[in-house]
Image (cartoon, rainbow, N blue to C red):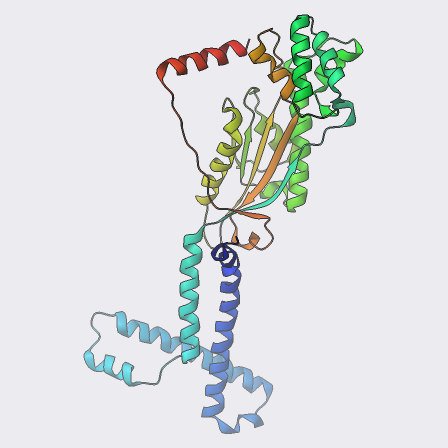
Length: 359
């Protein structure tokens, strides 16, 4: 079901801009009407005289408005002067006053909405050289020279039931083991995988959103198990020539919920820059690097990660500028994060499992 309040709220800033134009049109119409009524023979004057009269009338209108405000706000204004002001002809017509009141209401609603829009997103499409079949995956595992036949048979059965296709992506550092080369688990190999994935999705997301890299105000990248120095944020900033004052955050160790945490962080940072004529843009990147994280043991619980995880990544461009509302794909309504704590013994067991799986 469509929530029309959010749909209307998206167009309110544009209605506000149109309303300002209408307000000025009403003021100009009032000035011209006053000139015509006060000088019936104005049709005989030249265009320069028309312009002079219009400018003088406009100036007098705003001067009178300024004096009227001072007379109401000044603490020493006498009662007689206030009576004279009240009895005088209204400065603005009813149409101008009503339009101004409606604009004030719209402005109040816009300032309290503070939306965040999704401008574009992209996902990683691996090159053909990265894609392998189930049979090739088992061959890669065999080339690691650390798995028993029982473990290889177990991973083969898991692959058959995993729902993954026969052309899923693995990093070149591991795929090369099929061709008789040793597996590359180095930092350099991991960086190559990260750069290939991240730069591809960032480039596509920025192009889809029609955003220049220097327009990005906030950069958030999450990668749980690979956190190099210099960071992945430094890689993106340098590669795309982003601004030196960009707010960048590299999240690691946050697990499968890292994408949600990254979006929440970007949303909070954008809303700190909120305002009718302010706002900013954020780039959120989520990925995982497989090259250094292949499990080399024979415990079945941990063998699952060797069969289920693949190379991939996603990037989204967020904006809280009201001018982007009409061109946005989605509007972010809610982010809900819940911290769930189990009993103490379960906590210790879970922690020890995570530590054992890292070796």
